[in-house]
Image (tube, rainbow, N blue to C red; front, side, top):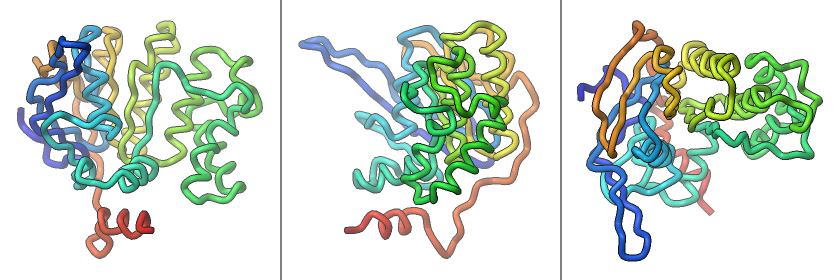
Length: 259
């Protein structure tokens, strides 16, 4: 598979197996891929083909049995645990099919929650949260709680929560599986706009065939391997992501997490 000119995320020779008793199941088998910034990359395939496992490996949530993951030039699995946590906090956003919202919090409070860990003041966090809710089109739902929101609105709150961190890497795991066609289309359009407007590398895994025509790039996956790599639409050109040469990302992470 040819690598794009600029890579925000790279997995090399990734392998992962899971064991249940005496039975070992190989999920990924030496898979390699590059994900470019400013694009929505869709990984399509049937349930059980390894899509979510791949996303977890690339997002720093699950360690591969072998292979490496380079995110923004950093070898994720060479980081110490606290460094990895800090990297995920500062540079990644996650959207899951289950929304993962807190029943007692309003929409704007849901979005503000992770911003406090980034060191933003309450006022700064509220402003950024309101901007993120406006970007996904539900600023008028800011004071509502999950029980008062539709499924599509809940998913947009979850996207706003990830977006408010201004991540360079955004991961979405089956974000439309619980939604009807109209809301699913709206969610995928939002993810596409995030890639285009913010230059983020957006990786979305799904088994929903409705999404295939909406990605900048579509990878078809089966049995732990990538079968095809296609571009249904022209790629979006954006400025490459760069780390300032005088403050290497890894050095800064280690300085911030040093005790």
